[in-house]
Image (cartoon, rainbow, N blue to C red; front, top):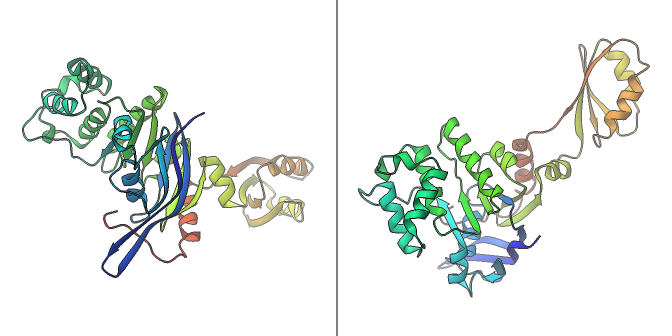
Length: 320
């Protein structure tokens, strides 16, 4: 699979008088075509600077960023023709209706057959019946769908979504996530930033954690859980907890963590130990009600990565 985004050893420092802020430090990553790639980190981590370099607003001090093989600094116009960014609510234009505002942007993007394109997108994002509404008067959920509609006008191969569900109610957030999944199914590449860990795990094929301008970890949600957590937890519900704990004590790769009434919690080096535990307990007295693998939440993974990667000198961004 070809690379949609290639970032090689990018660094960026902001300077104001004698003050320096190192926003990015030797960052490298690759995003494959057709995947949803999550870029996660706290405010000031370096996300905004990295995106600004990708879209050609900023130039890196060192390193190279490419989108579909095009240099983001040297071939900015070509890059901008292949991408679009959905960020904040910057799409309303005075008293223009949705349809009128989209027509305005379609002219800026040199969209062929703009009326046909706008009608198609409004229907795709369930906004066609609201096409005559004033953009400023939309609900937050409709605004976000409108912004995605605007972001698709130039038929971008890469769509950058900056916190697409922030501030939305549950129903609207679910609707937007469904739209994002549909965009992936159409073959688009999506770079996603979010502070919602449930959303990141549900949507993203792979995720990168960034903090203090450093790339801390990259992988699929499952890979990141495996790499970062180390020991895994298993909870055994049984009638004879003391017997179970005694049976498992000293077993290779298994450590008894807690013994509670009818519950034994153990830590294992990997979930392959579950089968070993089941075999070992087959001859144990009493009844085994259930054996449950207790996966950590992605929120716990995020917090651990940020804590472990939080010992560097503070970096930051002016407006992140």
